[in-house]
Length: 445
Image 1 (cartoon, rainbow, N blue to C red):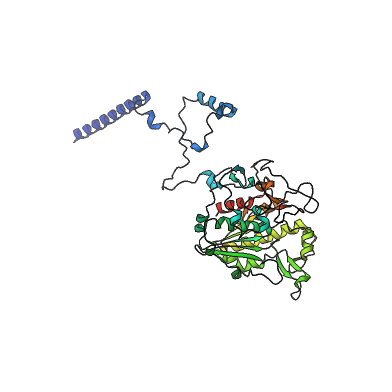
Image 2: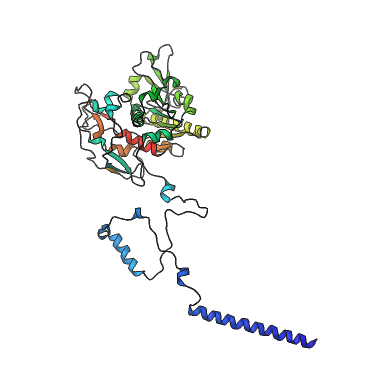
């Protein structure tokens, strides 16, 4: 028995000795470097997106590129960095979102570039939708170079507007424009852009009566228009609300006596029809002046009574108060209408030079982009509009800066009758700049 125990102890000591020898041998081999292959641990080479590379030969004049190249020579012995692939997929097989996609496209910044495919429609073939005074092909104007430009955002590719495709995307949907005459220009532009799909006019049905947009007694025009494309059940409408305030006759028996302009109430048309809309585009701005208020007999009201708050008696403060009120109301409604997307369009710039519209102001320039063709800004030129949508789910359709570069695109001195008089440096020729506003809108739907 004692012999067996002694033999067991000797065997255990022998096993420990063998393990120690093996460990020493493995450590020696590791130090010699024969137990690993550098190829197994070396990272993959850097892969860059081809779209981010510069044009061939451009690096020679760029000191930053030269310095990077010199640093590269010093570190050639170092292992290359990990692979960077912009079109990578995660472990679940889903495509990862690139930083630019996560951030979203900034349509405000970019440049105007020539494009022979423009315009998107013919003014001569869109007389049904265009007001004569805005259809510059019907005037004495002979230069139409302003039609041959498109907006190219800096950080993304904006797809070219395809009418038939847009109608399919907007199937069973309603697009509503609510605002002043610049909003009506945007509406007419969209009607012409969509009608360019080749749809016969018989495919378009006037549904204005469904929205209460009939021509009122003694009115020059209805309060708006609404048309439905039967093939896709797509409705596009416009409602005139120059200030985005609710207007109420001071005396129902005599509307000519004037109107209460409720600064804290959205137009009743919005309250009544909001649930029917899928896209809503609002704007206001150029009617906010004492002359317009006096001519239209609009009196400011707040909380159902004449305004006595001096802080918002000033016109621009009253406008901001109204826009903020409307945006706040809409933002509160959006959870109830998850299908609805709301845009507030920034101010369309005027281009009166050497005076105002009634003091000889002109916009005779015919040279496109004479003051530059690019916009690079961190904030909107329309700070009031940007502030009104901040913190809400309403999107800013920021067209102010890009439109400011296009002073040659206004109606100017041209008219149907060819008579001289006041120049229109507020409204735009159609086809023209408002088409771009709609392209930016369509790209975000």
